[in-house]
Length: 51
Image (cartoon, rainbow, N blue to C red; front, side, top):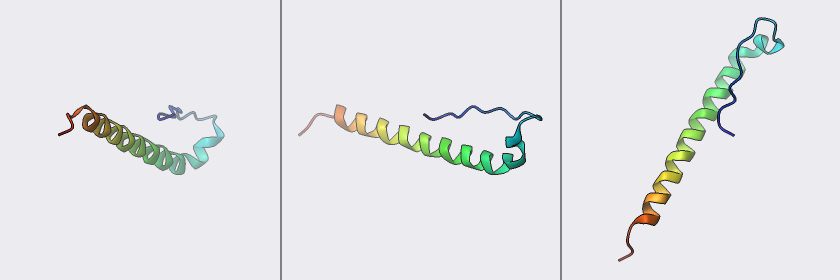
């Protein structure tokens, strides 16, 4: 579950902690990106012919 996709709503209680949530979201998206890159690298290695 990579993208949280929450929106900033003036009536939303989460606005009070938006900065913290935003940092958390960015961190999770970065982690997701590196997870996908790692997966891609593993797939690439799997595709290589074994000597």
